[in-house]
Figure 1 (cartoon, rainbow, N blue to C red):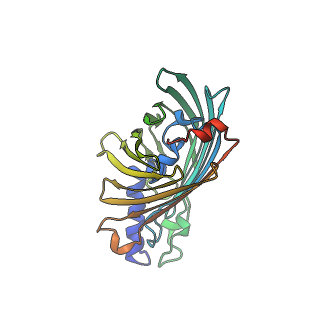
Figure 2 (cartoon, one colour):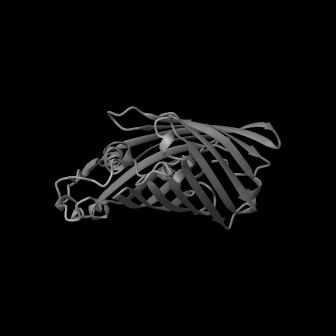
Figure 3 (cartoon, rainbow, N blue to C red):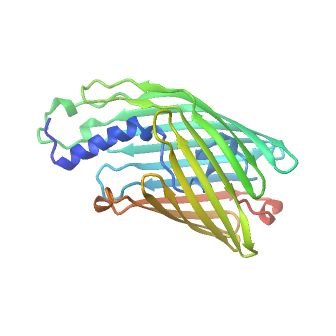
Length: 309
């Protein structure tokens, strides 16, 4: 098979590598600390209001076929915050490969002396497909790129827990309990994709430097059996209870800069920029992520007691 240019071969191989290893961890997020439902179903309803968040990530900008993702989450408390319901929908593309999913979430909270413990469940469907006909080739009639793989929808479910006080957060989850393999399509170069069972553990604490400034370190560990764990370390600062700014480091030599601004207790807008390693740096301007969150009917108590997680 002859492809138009060497970079197409590189991108194609990159897609396959991503989707057979960490690519099946749905989508990568640099602003996970502002949108906990993407990691843990126990987070549903924890913000004390109907919360809707949209997140768009453009990874490795400037590289043709690089991953892009769009995620929408919504969750709300029920019955005096003891229960929470949520919905998570996402779509991710990497070159000609597309992955989508939709999950419903349910959480139950147990009040404790110093905080609360939440248990969460989620269930839904994920899909995988490869549009090989979109690949540009030297020979228009190349049979290896004349068919698309069939879209396969597979059920899955997961669970998680979190312990939270006003200043401290600890969570652990297994968002996809079922490890399965998407069957190959009708063409010989369709590799299929294996969905691994993977695990998240994250924790955070908020310190007050003085009234107008707080510090929030965050740790996230992502683990897939047989693969080196990925670690995210972040240090964020909160100024005047409305403006977040900080930086982080992700294993793989990625430096992250991020900021979030909360306007009138309901609307929050966040942006992050990933500075890439020297291997990818010459080919990409970095990774960009934009997040918008809106919260309805925030109570007076929620406004007076800011949500740090």
